Length: 78
Image (tube, rainbow, N blue to C red):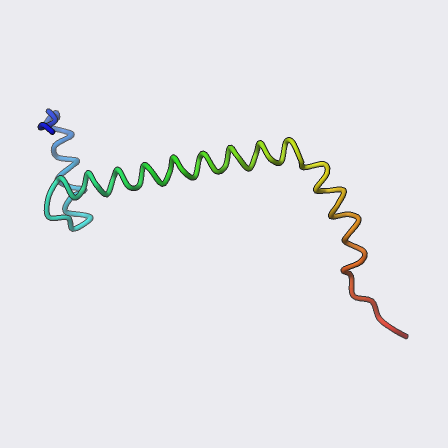
């Protein structure tokens, strides 16, 4: 792979972040940033999947929980 051309301002940001995260090289900082971006994309995909599930099956889950709720309630015996 090649070198990426950055503006002076971006180069300063990279150096400031590199020092802040105590990374020895820009490559280490880039790997760290890529790992974080991948985690964010995975979390976003999971949120979308959960929303889609709730949209499709939420009413059924709520009805099932309502039916099960009284059975799980502790009652006093007099």
